[in-house]
Image 1 (cartoon, rainbow over the protein chains, first blue to last red):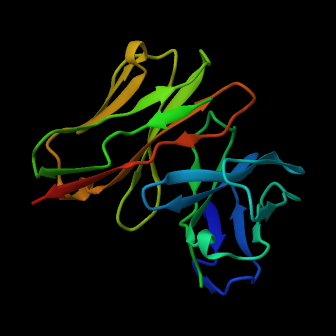
Image 2 (spheres, rainbow over the protein chains, first blue to last red; image 1 turned 120 degrees about the horizontal axis):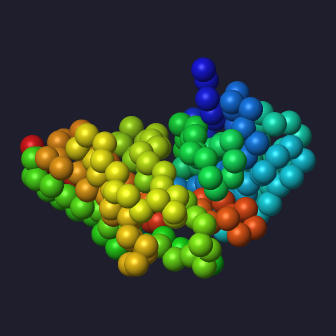
Length: 113
Length: 115
């Protein structure tokens, strides 16, 4: 059982480049979300989705874009990378938002130079 | 709005000591869920416990125990006889049911257990 799979695990970008962090889950969870983790800041919600075709902004959405065309996939796009987006990104899913246990991917460490 | 406060940024204890990690939350809802997650040095996030607002019974799981007190809006986590493997960052999180809000995390407490 793969659970939540994030790719890539590591990425280095130059300022202004774009990229997509991929997230896929095989548990048929309706709810998926993206968090970023920065030292001393805990986990902050970027975007989330309560089902295919539905997305919403979290606490820190600026500079990021998401879509949810299928139940399984929830990619996070950085449109024009900035050094402030250097962080560790976690994708998570659960069977019901706010109620069920969140299952996390292993994280993606992004460095923007 | 939801808010979770973990006032202890870092704690250091000697192995076999007991340690309590504090978590204070704010919510306007009467129905909500509280969580604890562990992040060991390897970086993954591990679910420890979920508690709903209607269940104030304390929970014990091996050396871990949780004390939920609605009167003080606290959901504290105690590790008894700590071990080096308990060294990690621990996050408390909250979700309420107003508008299907997602999980809000505290900033975490870094626990170091020294042999």
